[in-house]
Image (cartoon, rainbow, N blue to C red; front, side, top):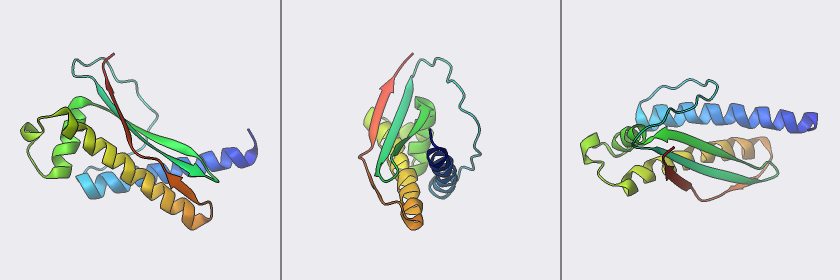
Length: 130
């Protein structure tokens, strides 16, 4: 990798961390801090992985991983309803997908402000169990 590529990776990582903090604070009233990824232990409910990519002069993707139970909490906070009312996989998929979209939208906006234009992909959701 070139020095320019490594610099772009660092820049996108910083923008993504900033966007996650802002989106989670604004939309969910959850304060988060960045740290190295941790493996999720097996969970009988499984996991939800949402992603959105960006394509242009700078290209990449942002993935948000969570347990199904945390995705349910995110959904309830986004919709302003009790967790007990998050009663379908579709509801539990939509909120993480929209959060990914908001995070990557903020990254895209910051990138475009700095010069490199890009376009977003549609959100993608994967559910599964280990």
